[in-house]
Length: 106
Image 1 (cartoon, rainbow, N blue to C red):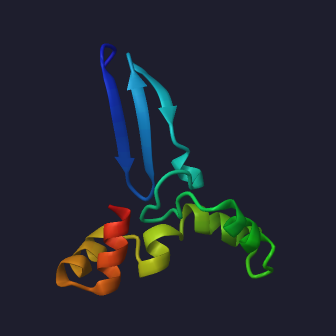
Image 2: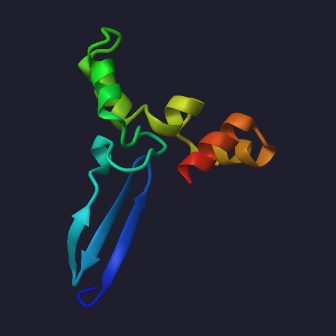
């Protein structure tokens, strides 16, 4: 590991992608806080004006917005499930929404 240069991806409820060089992480996205791609649970990068509008809409509490960014965004928000096995099954069966969401995440 100390002699390698690697790109490492962790793919779970969130997705982080890190650059490793000579045994050290030299860069990584802040996946827990929503940076990067959308994932089974995280909304991913969003336009700043969209976030600002959500914050000042009066529709959401701070806790609801934080949960959307870290736990109930992404695939979960679209499919009411963060279980990618279920979404993949629907994708294979040709469910139009699952095909759209699964393909977009991929």
